[in-house]
Amino acid sequence: MRLFGLIGHPLGHSFSRQYFADKFSAMGIADECRYDNYDLEQIDLIKEVLEQNPELVGFNVTIPYKEQIIPYLDTMTQEAARIGAVNCVRRENGRLVGYNTDVYGAGVTIDHLCNGVACKALVLGSGGASKAVREALRQRNIPYLLVSRQKAPDTITYEELNHEIMQSHTLIINTTPLGMYPKTEAAPAIPYEELTDKHRLFDLVYNPAETLFMRLGRQQGATAMCGGEMLKEQAEKSWEIWNI
Image 1 (cartoon, rainbow, N blue to C red):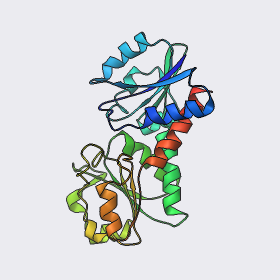
Image 2 (image 1 turned 120 degrees about the vertical axis):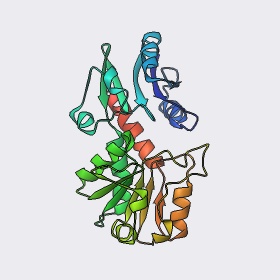
Image 3 (image 1 turned 90 degrees about the vertical axis):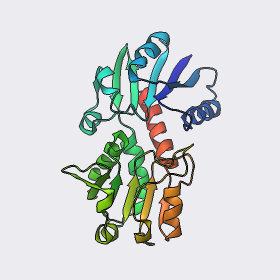
C-alpha cells in the first residue's frame, strides 16, 4: 500500500481526501493507494506520523503549517525556498523534500480570471498561501499590494483601502481562511461597495463553493471564483511530484 496524506489543523473543511479517493478509484488503484488526513494540533507531531507510517510516500500541507513545516524538511526546491512556504512534501529514501504546488494552482486560476487583461491586484493576507499567490503574480508581471491587519513596510491595512486603490486594483485575492466552513459568515473587511463589474475576485477558500466574500462581490457585478480549481490543479501537480 502506497500512503499519501494531508497535514494541518483543523481539517474538517478539507476535500483533499475525497478528491484522491475518487482519483484512485477512477484510476483503478484504490487497493494500492490511500490518502489520509492527519489533523495535528502542533507541527512537531509530524515526527510521530512519519515514524508510524513508513509507507507514507508524500503528503500535502495546509493551514497553519505551510511555513512551520520547513524546519522538518531535509531540503526543498529553489522555488519553495524563495517563497518561504511548502504545501507538498515528497519522501525520498527517508528524506523529506519540500515543494510548492500552490503557485501552479493559483496561477491557473489567475490566468482564467484575467484572461490576458492587464490588471493590478490586492492580496488579502500574508501567510503561506499568500506567499504562493504573490509568486504566481510576480511570474505574470502583475503588480500587487499586500493587505493585512498589521501595518508593515510593504503592507497596507484594510482601513487604508480607499476609492482610488479599489478602482485601480481590479483583481482581489483572498488568501485568508475567512469564510471557510464552518465559519461561513465571515469575510475580509474590504469596502465591497467600491466593487464594480470590472473587478475579479479569487477566494482561495473552496468550502463553501460560494463564500460571503464572493457573494458580496457578485452583488456588485464582480466576477468571482473559489479555490476549487486551484485545489484540483495543485493536487494533480502534487501527484505528479510523488510519482517522479
